[in-house]
Amino acid sequence: MNQDLTLLGKHSAFFTSPDEAKLEAFPNRSPQRPYIVELDTHEFSSLCPVTGQPDSCHLTITYSPADKVLETKSLKYYLVSFRNFPAFNEQVVNRILDDLVAAVQPRWMKVEGRFGARGGIRLTTIAEHQPENRPR
Image (tube, helix red, strand yellow):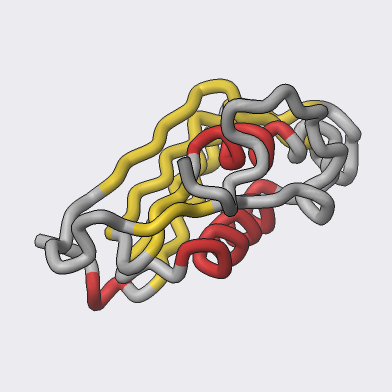
């Protein structure tokens, strides 16, 4: 097992905000090949900064790894840290993209958040890192 992974295989407490959370990665065993990783959850939530009400979201993270691959337990803990984090939906999606790019420096990455409807309007935010490198 990779010695740099501190959460995998251990009982850990959840982080209380994304500022405290730790994203971990391990070496890509196939860096010569462009391929896609898709991570998908229906259980993401954050808080509306105006009303304090929870915003639920179907979140999809799609990326093409370069030298590092995102470790999924650290991702789960990172995403849970948003449950009590007040931010607008667009801000949340862009923050997740920025944090993930900093952690794994992918060839390409896309984060898509499909938030639950409010007042009859569903909001979807899509943010991309290096769209010119998107595998075809």
